[in-house]
Image (cartoon, rainbow, N blue to C red; front, side, top):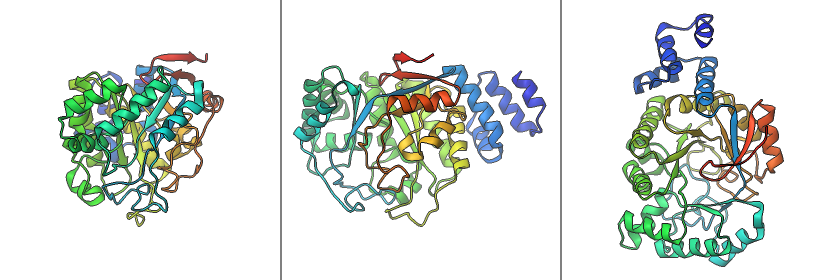
Length: 370
């Protein structure tokens, strides 16, 4: 049937050949990915991405009940795209461990995951953050703790004079379950020099995740798109993630993160269009054939646009959030108080003709709505 659809459309032979590979479950090359990015129509990319999505996940579409904790926005780095750190934000904060634990306790059984990320604080090392995780674990023994980007981990480990293996084992023994995908930005050092020159290298980000995977700590991955990068840079970024996934099988999900241009040093860059957002979701699903889930982070793109992304390869809408993150609201996201109920998320999913699935943090099914 898919071949018939292709035959009914006017598609250049090069694109048709790539599409046939995708329908047959074969991996496409970086060169083929770049060609699709530049020349593939949005309708073709949607068709291909939806095929890949359904071959991996069927009609199941995931969400969880989570809360974000952002310990501080005081940061040793001053990334030009960032609207969150104390260098750009009109406010700065340092939550105490007691304040953070109280927040988790106050939500009781409303959440199954606590997501802890923030700035790279100059005065806090691995032992401080291991203590935070241990306190959260004691307060909520059954909750999944997903915490600290690779950028945070690299800094806190070096500050303590430890190897990555030693530092990650300390965090794991304290109760860390997984790590998020933030801080990847774009894996091109020349572009990183422009947008986040002080930050860790691409190689350092990848190494943290590889070591974590080898220690049995799963993670997610991200990309920051829509600034000064080109499609070639996006494909190279995806390819390096795909290669690491071939090696470790430790990534659960990939989350494209859109550059938002408010209150930062790159405000002169116009934000990319909705069409470009959907093109990027589709290409992420098509190219990353070995990462099982593509997530639309709705506080970044908005609820309705996240629902639309379900037609472009996305199978995860993240979680309830509980108005607990400032990262995108400070950068000008439409939703300044991000929170959704489980019922509201399910309505977005069923409205797209798909099946809502409440998951845990590693995609075990907790509740499936059929």
